[in-house]
Image 1: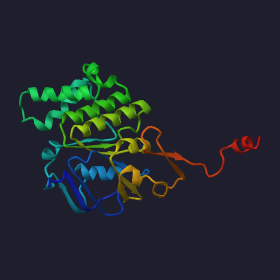
Image 2: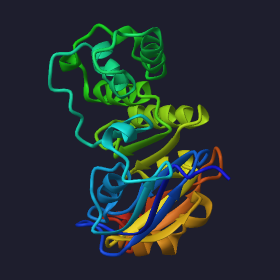
Image 3: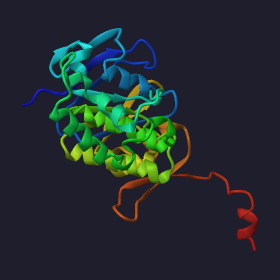
Length: 268
């Protein structure tokens, strides 16, 4: 049996989670989505997994090691936060190339393997045509792709992303999830927090559902995304239907009373 990529055992967070949490991620897990309402603890969980937040209690092991160094962790784990730090006037290619730093000896010359990783990441993210453009001249969706490409250039075994589609339109959000799907097909395990339940249902193999700072459920979309479970987590009336293309669950809001004007129209 292979060593798990990440293990959290009865971990108590310093904030954001109200109960201990246990979680295991392994090679081949594909894309695991983290769902829950605002304030449920999604970002806190991801920061614990990425080694950016030290737990108050419990055990965290990454790649079979307890508390690996930041340098060691960066060689196989990449983290993309909600706020993307691209504040300087780098070109797209230079920004993506930063993902190679964990793999390069100090003061070492740029290597063919580094350039090959950057080229592959630019190609995967659809950024080859923008490689010489300043990141300051990009749209929000393009900057998100740069952040993803930088993470892919890092050649991680585990990729963690916090709400990568939060500020994107429908087309860019869909493209981002397709990119993550391609990454998992290439052998990268992905852990991603999402607000869009329907994208999560279509692209995630497994889901973690948080509510009130607790992990209240884990499973594939077909079993976890039921009306009672999601209504309890989000505190809102919902309706679950099957997607017409693939049968996966899709979530709709549901009216407890007819919308304005509907009752009159039905009486005509």
